[in-house]
Amino acid sequence: MYTVYGMAISGNCYKLKLALTQLDQPYRWVELDILKGATKTPEFLALNPNGQVPTIVLPDGDTLVESNAILCYLADGSPLWPSDRRTKAEVLKWMFFEQYSHEPNIATVRFWVAYAGRAQELAAEIEKRKVNGYKALKVMEETLAKRPFLAGDKYTIADIALYAYTHVAHEGGYDLSAYPAVQAWLARVAAQPGYVGMN
Image (cartoon, rainbow, N blue to C red; front, top):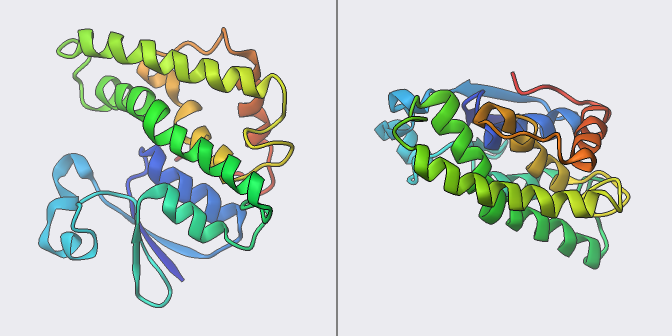
């Protein structure tokens, strides 16, 4: 059985919860409160020297970190991770996009606003990041206006990776009303077999 060290409000951790559930893989969840320093203890740092969640302990006792790398590992050999080379590259493209263009602007703003209580203190930085966050949503909108899922006609871990923070973007003050294709995609993801919510 897998053991996942995570925090329920984290989209990066939620990615694993959603994938494991949809892959029908049993797992044990260990909740850690990063706001109280739970990932900075010697015990946790022995598992992940970077001191971040999610961290997963595999059935053989080995440890794997970084949410999108874990998604690739979990989905290997399943329909969530395509077998053909070109579609695989398309999936990876979106997962890199999530980490570099989407997450730093949408997830970070959500954290500052909804959980860290820093909305006033960081107001100028939040507005700057929201400009880039809306650019990321526009890229998604243009793609999803042409096809049902990010990497093509089928649901993959690319969708899981980007769904995690997009579906809670409103918690950071993002308005998705101008992105109908993104909204329709959110509904399609939530309708997938084995879907489970964040909390």
